[in-house]
Image (cartoon, rainbow, N blue to C red; front, side, top):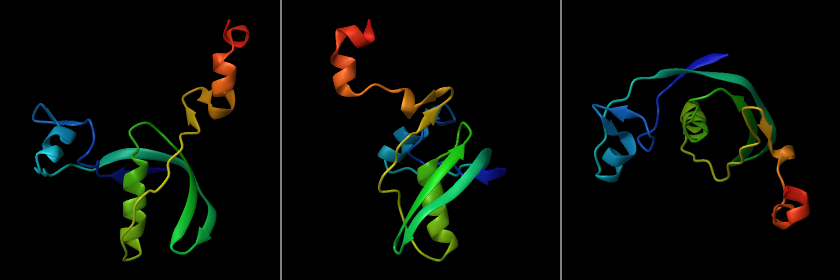
Length: 110
């Protein structure tokens, strides 16, 4: 469903004409408004404290790294995303991708 998420300072969103990541690099933090984003599904694939492995199917504008920090904060802890793999972007799936070897083969890409 839809949730409210505060974008991270290290994002490309603009505030007063400046990208947040430019401000963050200068040590400036500004207030960011929560934005509505969509989570289609959230599955726990593995949980061995202190690590949790999730599969998130989300809509555009969703910050997975922020989800990691938000989940940790919700249980009274701190946390971060240690590995992130995009499995799909729009109509393109990782299963549609070529390996390095396949992409190097002129016969395959022709």
